[in-house]
Image 1 (cartoon, one colour):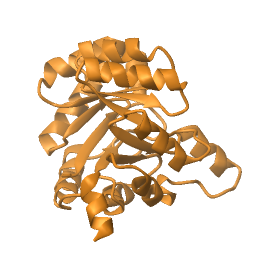
Image 2: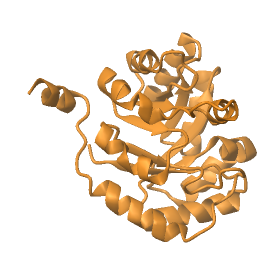
Image 3: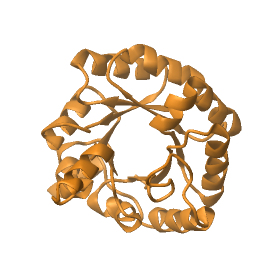
Image 4: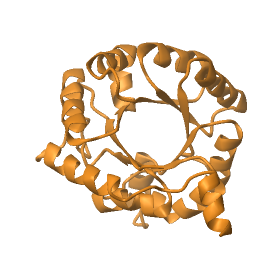
Amino acid sequence: MRPIVQVSLDIIDLDEAVRTAEIAVRAGVDWLEAGTPLILAEGLHGVRRLRERFPTTPIVADLKTMDGGYLEAEMMARAGATHVVVMARAHRETLRCVVKAGRDHNVKVMGDNLGCEDWVAGARLLEDFGCDYVIHHIGYDERRGIAAAGLRMPSPLDRLRDVVAAVSVPVQAVGGLTLEQAMQTPSYGAPLVVLGAPLTVDADQFKTADGDLESILRKICERVHGFGDVPVGKERRREVLS
């Protein structure tokens, strides 16, 4: 699988989110994410606005769905999202409902293992229920709380290889990665590279980070796309067996 670069628009001002998305697309970013803060601030209107401005670009709606799975996924699909996110910690019926909505409305489902006591088991559960992708995710509050206690802040890279090995769907690593670490995730077997705070979004405010964002994103895209194909699914199994 060719590596994918995704920008998380964790921005609460819709006009600013669209401007940031325009920069990202010009720089070569593949997918746009309507981040949770943007969805909380603008809801379906935010997704519709992105779809109107970018008619052919995949749009991930980071709903972090925990309940009302079919309805949430259906609404976002009708607004123009191509991907929705459901949490592994949701009830199993919610997982079933989101996956069914994805099939009914031609939307891909990304399952997020944030908060799972066993990240690997959570990833397997998501695949077993039919999720098309797995997000291996260490949360913002979790990272900061552990760091505030004087302990080592966890990283999704800690168990990323284990998660990748446990599933046959593409994996994305999220949560506190540095720019260099994010660009390294394809080497772990995770082809979906997501960029958000503090890489492209301010770490402490829901707004675009300072700096020459377009130049930074262009360099990231060139490097990530230049990595080459990342084996997933049957390709990875053949590679392991050989």
